[in-house]
Amino acid sequence: MAYDPLSRSTRTSKRMLLVVVVLAFFIDLFHISLLDIPLGGLETRVDPGVLPLLIFVIVLYFTISFGIAIFDDVANTPTPHVLEIYNSELLAKLYAGLSQAEKDITQMLASHGVETGPALSIARTISFRVKNAFPANVSRETIEQITLHPLDEETRSGLPEDFGIQITRLISNVVEPPAKDYHHPKIGAYLQFFYGRLYGFELALPAALALGTLFLYFQKIDLAWLGLFTTASGN
Image (tube, rainbow, N blue to C red; front, side):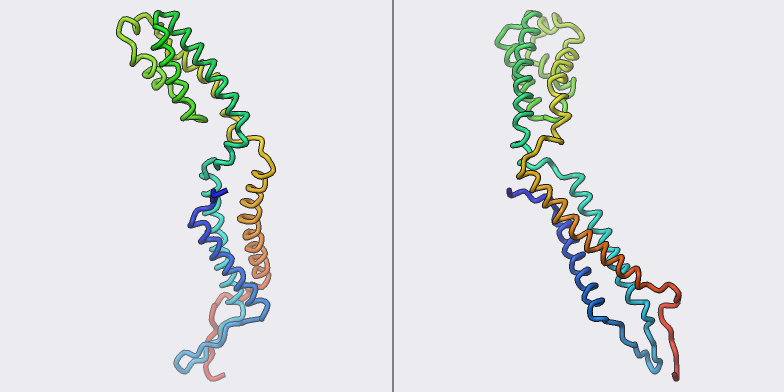
């Protein structure tokens, strides 16, 4: 499947997070510490507590950045094309319902004096618009416009005032049941693997590494010192 659920910004945040996490583990593994910094005759000693706090803040920053980016992707990702495959049964029911709705609309129009040809054309236009808008509902104003626009003034005057509402209600009864399940289809093994990769490999693994690193360095932070640098001269 050529569908990538993650945006470029999310992948960049993920790479940066993984790089920072790996560096943090190497620093802990090899016990790397900051060196003393000479400043113009003064011997400035960097407190040992600086490095753990610094790493903790950096990892936390990239963790939050990655979390925001992937949350935005998950919240705004359009339905993958593969969902259409597993929605085939649901869509088949929708199309069957719209096919019956075309007949009902045609009969409703015919009962008010609209000829079969124009009535069938109107019904099919409404059905076509609904199929392209699914799972969203087509507005009553749109349905009324599609219905009334091709008709002459005399034929329009013969229709009930609530005729557009009747057709809208008919279409809604067909569309609403499958629309409720459209975002939660019965999925097969391949789609389960797809979401397993998305939420497992792409989200859970980096998150677990980041949280583990944060926990590791949180334990190393010594908040007993409040001055970041201790300066001593002549010691």
